[in-house]
Length: 197
Image (cartoon, rainbow, N blue to C red):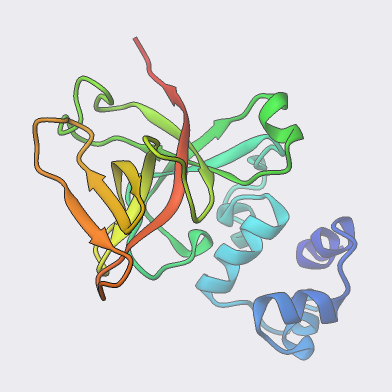
């Protein structure tokens, strides 16, 4: 059986449901499942996320490596305006414990690639981030400002806006008023730090 058809059936999705979710025609889905055509690379990335498999598996490069249900993607960079499934700056997968999976929340991993946040976060640390668009006062969060790549920041909620500070407290932060054009967009909150010693 065609892998695209098999994976769709395993997820109890109809061709119409999948087509709507991906923003393609039902005919396109049918053609993938009958080997008459193939999805483009961005669609393959989305399908890999939906089906919890690797893009290599969908492309037939590595049929032995299936992403486990308790694994999340680890990103090394989060560019502005790109959906999680389409971000290519990745560094493998990280397993989550069953407790985290029970709450129904979505998580991603974020690997620290420099020493700018030491000693709080170190190069090589993997931060487990709960994907959400808000945070509590004092949280470390993945924040995006004015179309730049998202960065880990220390966030303080104020009545008239939000104060976004670097993780290292001796560096200057920025205040974004509720009324200003420039906004600090919260992409997720750090819930766990994994460090190899």
